[in-house]
Length: 309
Image 1 (cartoon, rainbow, N blue to C red):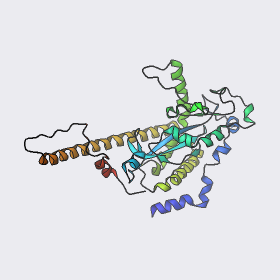
Image 2: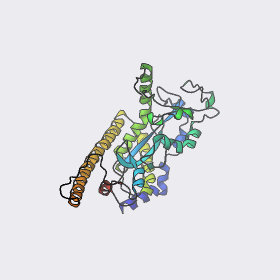
Image 3: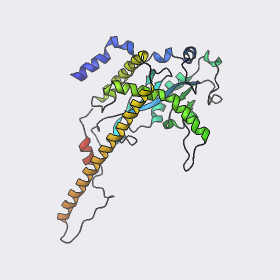
């Protein structure tokens, strides 16, 4: 009943005025310049993009279907959503949710047509000053800020990303300083996630409702967060909240791995006893850490399985 009421509230016609689709139209680069609300270090960047992860229960289905939703980075099953946030702190676009194993850059590529259109300069904006990175390569585009998960995107679009440390090498002082500047500007999207997840538990705790309703709930929370930011701009503390959320994911993942290790150990011991009774007297059974007893790790999935979405 609670879920039905929540969906009815999100679908209500009077709620549509809180949608965020018109935010990007209002805050063009021309408007950002006029209001003095551009990024401090990269004023040629129009917005920042990042992906947020939310844990879910392991979906019912085959091992291959389950694996699709498993994020190695977070060590949990879940969903990912990409958000685009302006230097004003408002989110103006979010992608549809995808399984947790999908790479961040792949989510961006699925929405590349939208980003390419949004980054394109208007006729009026082409006369504006622009001496930012990659302007020689993409003179007709504004830049966007992204993290290391978007490496390589600059080959197709004007994306400003941190420099990765080369294998076995070190970054130069100028490269580290540039990375710090990128992080300082793009923290706005992390602060947005921190504010949203502080207020709305439906997008911060383990998601247990229907998968087909997730996008509606997530976008509703984004819209409501925009309304709150209008009266209370983002602060550094919002970023701290996101860090606490990410640390919580890591802690939860470690606990699940520990439970899995105990489950696997018990399974191996029971298997060893069963096989020992079948072997001729005097023969020993030996299993090492590499021995696999279940190709689909059924003991693990049974423990974490949940009803179908």
